[in-house]
Image 1 (tube, rainbow, N blue to C red):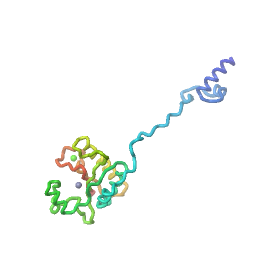
Image 2: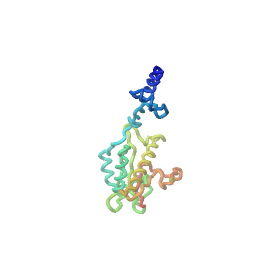
Image 3: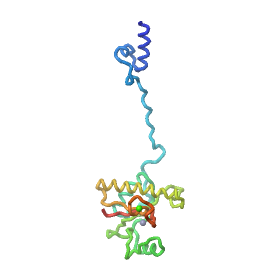
Image 4: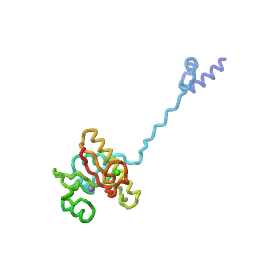
Length: 202
Ligand SMILES: [Ca+2]
Ligand SMILES: [Zn+2]
């Protein structure tokens, strides 16, 4: 009898991972809970190679960004933390707008129809043109799959704007040239201006 008790005690001590097999046999009934489960392997961080934070604007991007309304600056500063992009243009002179109109790049003549890129009265632009940046690639390559990066960026911009608005840090919503009327339908517009974002009054 003592023999079996000793064996059983050894087994239970293994199961319960205790040093005192005798105690285990007396007090612990083996159950699902008492079986010692090896600690789970520490979960590996999912994002290991992807750079998560810490992009910065280049000099030219920064100076262009600074020609924009503070709300636009706040939104872009939020997004650059997680996704790299360049600023192509912020504030635009009347001359430049007229040039774009004449060459068909814009449908706004700058006088009768003003662009949001023109001075909003405070010397700032309420619109910005931005482009996803990755060394050695071009989101405007003409490949449909490259264009998708504009959509990715637009989602981040929209999210940042919504968050900042909720936090009371900005007072506008964001309108995107890839989806002007914000109804989440992309086939209802003829003129896609994928780099273009502008502040919208609430
Ligand atoms: Ca739409
Ligand atoms: Zn634009």
